[in-house]
Length: 107
Image (cartoon, rainbow, N blue to C red; front, side, top):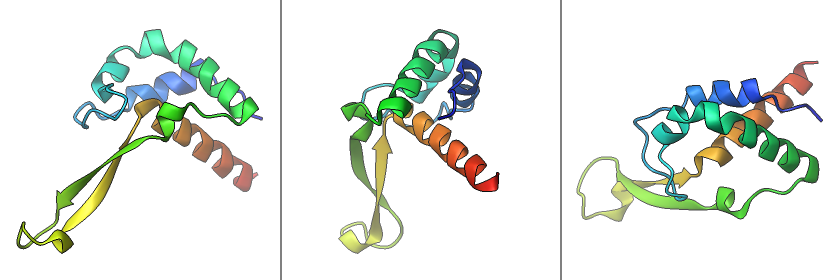
């Protein structure tokens, strides 16, 4: 398994969009970005343990699904699409996993 470096986590947190909505865990992406120096090390440890054990915190599996209007009559449910808001730490872990899988497939 790859080692999940603090620098990797810090880099991913620094690229969070501060204008995104608050997630189901109540943490705004801007807060994670602003606190990246304090959060990178503990998150890298959590991510490493999650990778090694195959366990994912339950909060990272939750999503708030909200309807977003596409076009047309707002009273017609067909004119909406669902958008899932998931936790920021979970999204960062997904990026780490995607990167590791992509790297493995390229090697």
